[in-house]
Image 1 (cartoon, helix red, strand yellow):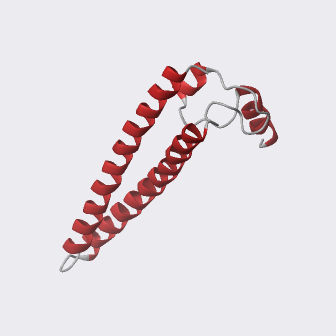
Image 2 (tube, one colour):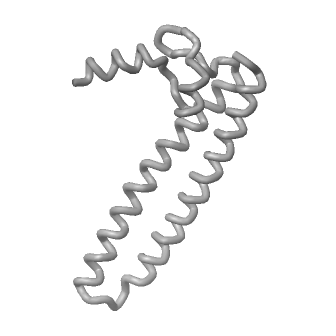
Image 3 (cartoon, rainbow, N blue to C red):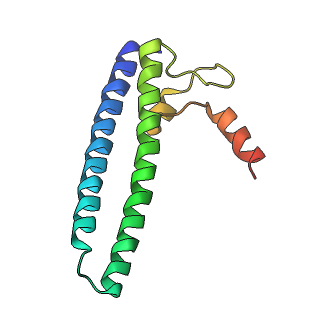
Length: 118
């Protein structure tokens, strides 16, 4: 695989990581604000705050999962394992990696996995 492509993917992953981290930080600030504002509210407002907290929690969970995928991809780049299917070992096409920079499976292995999951 072309080193320029790998370097570009690492830059893309780092930029994506920074976006996810900023979003998590923003959600943490929103959590804090909602918790601070809950005192003295009526039950309807408190219920709305609980819903907001649950939504933020769900979003943060997904972002943490994305952050783990990004970190794993960066680690694979650093160890020279990026771009190879973790199941069959074949090279993952650059087009797939551009679309899904955190991909760990080639299209064939991913398709086979999805078929078994049905």
